[in-house]
Image (tube, rainbow, N blue to C red; front, side, top):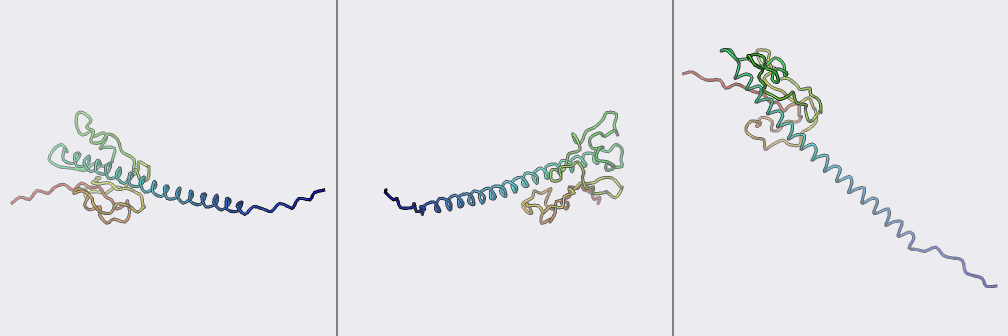
Length: 164
């Protein structure tokens, strides 16, 4: 009878296990980096959309104010008046609809109240910190260095004509 020596475990089995663990850890780190990048890109898209919608509100408020019938200019009392302006014989539309805030996802906006009690501007209700803090255009120059989206105010200030 022939006796076979006992089998010794292979030293390469541990190497394969370590290589597999390393590849799983590397894949996890790569996925985390992609997730962070995607999150920042999505926030940048929301910021750009907020700037666009905020400027549309500013222009609509300006149109409403400047096209006031009669000699007394006034701001809208509700945002819905920008969609359905009933001060004329036919309904005027300064906005297509009351847009949702892209940062919060809701159609609720903070209101900047005019001295006459109307709405002279809007702002987001989000307390998130913006990524963009500089490089704004002329109309949005006052948004620079703000620490929250709720501080991004889109306000229409009528030009005051000076008489000499």
